[in-house]
Each structure stands twice: as C-alpha cells, then as structure tokens.
Length: 383
Ligand SMILES: Cc1cc2nc3c(=O)[nH]c(=O)nc-3n(C[C@H](O)[C@H](O)[C@H](O)COP(=O)(O)OP(=O)(O)OC[C@H]3O[C@@H](n4cnc5c(N)ncnc54)[C@H](O)[C@@H]3O)c2cc1C
Image (cartoon, rainbow, N blue to C red; front, side):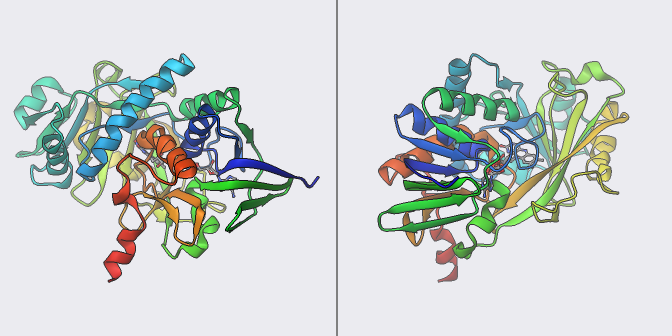
C-alpha cells in the first residue's frame, strides 16, 4: 500500500538516540514518525548487552562534561516518567599509569569542571577495592557519581513514552531511500512514502549506507562482550563493586560492571575498535579468539573474577575518524539533521541527544554545547 502521510519530523532508526528523540519531539507536541528496520528494542545494533557505563569525569574530552551534566538530569526524568529503575549508581574507578590516557584524561575533566573525585595510589586502592591487582606505580581516579544504564529497558521506556505522548513509531519498516529539497523531505519504505518538514538520522551502524554522500568515513566494527561466573562472586555484587576501566598497555581499555540480575555473571569487555565489518553481514555467533579479547584482563587484574564463561555477545561500534560523535545539520540539506559516529561511547548521552536533536529539528539550533561535535572539524583539518 502506498501512501504519503505528512509529519513535522521523521526519525530514521529507533535505537538509543532515535527513541529518545521521538520522545522529546512527541512531548513537545511535534508530529513525529519514527521508522525502525528491526524490532524495538533489538539486539542487532549498538545498544544491546544489558548494561552501559555512565561516568562524568570524561577522559575522552572535557567538552563532553556539560552534556553529561544535562544527560544525568534527563536520565532522572526518564526514571520518574517511566516509573522504572534504569540507572544504577555504583561509583567508578578509572585505572592505569598516572600519565596514561584514562587516569590523566579523567583527572583533567574532573578538575576542569569541578567534579567530585579522589585520586588513589595502588595501596589506597587495594584497601578499598581488594578485587583489583594493579602493577606497581599505577593509580586510580575514583568518581562517586558513576554507574550503569540498562540499554534495552531505556529504549523500550523511551519508545513507550513517545507513543503515549502521540508519536507514531513503526517497527520492521526499513527506510530504503530518502530525498530532501527546499520544501522538506520524503522517505520511502517497503510500506509507503512519507513526507515531513525535517529528517533526523539516528541510524547507528547503518549510518554510512544512509549517508554515503557525507564524505566522512564511518567504520563499523564487531565488538565482543563476555560474562563469566567469578570464583568469588560475593566480591563482585552490585553495591560492592564499581564500574571500572583500565588502560590496556597494548592499546584501548578493559572495562566492566558489577553483577546484576539483568544477565547472570560478571560482565567484561575490551574497548578499542574490533574487526571492521558490515552491519548486515557481521558474524554474530562467537569466533575463535573472542574470549581472549577480555580474558587476559581478568587473569591479570581481577583474579577472583577469572571463572568459567557464561555468555559471549556481539555488538557494533560506528567509529568516526577521530572517535568523537558527529552531530550536525547535513551540509547540503538544511532540513536534515545527523547524529552518528558514536564510536563506542554514546549510550550515556542518549537522553541529552534526544533534546539536542529535537532542538535542531524544530528550531534549527540548540543551546546545548555540541559545536565541538560538528562536521566542520573535518574540513578544518584539511585546510
Ligand atoms: C559492546 C559495546 C559496549 C558499549 N559500551 C558503552 C558504554 O559502556 N557506555 C556508553 O555510553 N556507550 C557504550 N557503547 C556505545 C553505545 O552503546 C552506542 O554509542 C549507542 O548505543 C549508539 O546508539 P545509536 O542510536 O546510534 O545506535 P542503535 O541503538 O543501534 O540504533 C540505530 C538504529 O537505527 C536503525 N536503522 C538503521 N538504518 C535504518 C533504516 N534504513 N531504516 C530503519 N531503521 C534503521 C537500526 O536498526 C537501529 O535500531 C557500547 C557499544 C558497544 C557495541
């Protein structure tokens, strides 16, 4: 059946960023249509795996901190609006050589923005968190307001609240083509054609194929998450164990979560781009070597956690060239807004991204400080 329904905004992709954007638009009274190619939520994109770390002392760049402050407020609002527990505050520990990216970057953000934190040497850390065994000379930054979000529940809550506020959301309806001109936008799906004044792209790992005219390479990589049953489980229980990240001397970082009932076992993973892949062809079943992406960190730093494997799951990163997000208007289409390249660290921002993208789609600008995430940085580099 072909039809041409008209909306104020169409959102392509109802994952983390798209679901929050649909909610934010709907609660502002905007006529919004969200189109998702799979189910809502689903395990085939970037938002699967039962937990996502949230932290404020952001080693990646201090400019993210003001956005995080707003993100925390909005997570609180989402919990209230949905009546669900979606964020567990646990405290965070970021560890490594004192001059390494994780410790020094987190400290720089904490100092610049006056965030509560403590620095711990190896002996102080051992007193408070005996689970970790760190090399001599390493240090830790302790952050009280860190924890984790429940990603599948967050997406379901945003979609549910958006629908109740008047959004139209269609699952299992992939966008095949889009077109923008001076008057607005149209998109085509197997079920029909839709028109709107504005289009928001939140297509995650599929952003490259939707936005191939952007000229910015987005590399999709296959990432592995593991769950093990610790030798001493009581040491890793929620309330006794932090969210944590350790600078891996070979590059990237190892990170993990306390145990919690969403999925049995202790979750651990390695954060660095994995093997490049195509989101439609990625090997979702375990491959040889998957367990070795995180097992050495257990052996080395968390020996009491180094127990038998329970689960291995895969997920997708969409890496921008500099690993910072891309949030901007489409350079050639003023009625199109893009949000992609979340490079494996975007989920904690999903709440504030809904607000940013709703602002950009309806007002053409936002008061939230996202300029540093604009496309301009790529052309500036070339000049
Ligand atoms: C293993 C792993 C661990 C991570 N850990 C953390 C963490 O601890 N903390 C953190 O903050 N971040 C973390 N991240 C990153 C974070 O999860 C992502 O940045 C975030 O989920 C990206 O959200 P998104 O909305 O862009 O993508 P998604 O949630 O995948 O949503 C994109 C949606 O668009 C849909 N779509 C695409 N194309 C079309 C189309 N043509 N038509 C219709 N629908 C379409 C897709 O089906 C999908 O549902 C992690 C990521 C991974 C993979």
